[in-house]
Amino acid sequence: MPRSPLNPSPYEVLGVAPTASHDELRRAYRRMLRETHPDTGGDAARFHAVQHAWELVGTPEDRAVYDSGRPTRGEQARATWAPAPPRRPSESRPQARTYGHPGGLSREHYLELMREWVGRGAALPDPYDPALVRSAPRDIRHLLANALAEEATATQAASLGIAYTVWHDVATDAPGDPWASKLDHVVLGPSGLFAVQSEDWGAPVRVKRNEIVGEAIAPGERPMHSLSLRAKSVARAARVKFTTLVVVVPDDAIDEALTVGRMRGLTSVVVQRSRLPGVLRGDLADAPLLGGTELFEVRTRLQASIRFT
Image 1: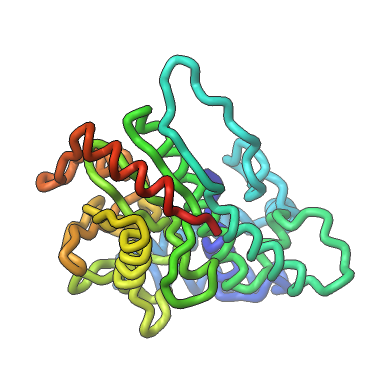
Image 2: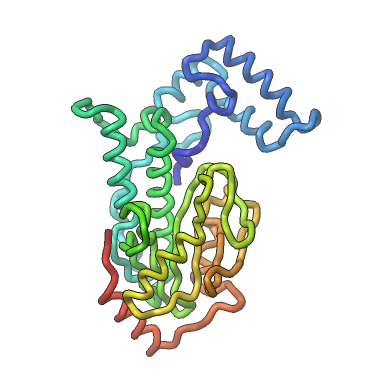
């Protein structure tokens, strides 16, 4: 998966404008090294980020490569956030049954806002061009980041096997615009019925009193509470009961690989993306198991009631 569109640019890390001169860039780099060095009370993660930023734009040649969106040193291929081509299922391992278009609505809204931002009638040959994406406002990049996160989750869910059924981009009656109130994924299998939301805020988050908080989360935003409302809407329409609420975040967004709590009587989980398959397969100690008859009945009800965005 390519770097998140919400990752700060080297210029943001160094605290300068993209139009800064090379001398301004070098002075900013030296200043940030002093401010972030662990030996002087700085933060090690920020210190390494400053060093990496300088590797990307520290010379006129490297800077020209970065600004153009071409592969930088250490990258294997050009970074792209365009939709991946359809993947042919492996013949050696049956895939989960999947329905819906993961990330589809987020990408649709991203393209709409990107066209408005560039300007009506203006040429937009590649809306996923890295240089263009990096220059876009944060709310536009956030939509693309979430689309990529949803697609990554969909890939993991498909690998669970034929005992699982997955629905993507599920419409709900929760308040808000369709793209903001949809349920990203519904996953059903022997290990339970999961309401899954894929998120990328582009910054570290943590769990406090069973809710997700962080600098990048807007005041009053309650991601886990919102997920519970979306799940409740789908459960009510299908006359089923979810067993687990799951919010998936990038591995580097949270220190704990797995944080478990309770929300509205349901098990709530915030999980690093790499740990998600284990959660969906039943890694949770108190995960209820669904028998064959019950699993079939729940699947039938969901299949008959789920609406897609």
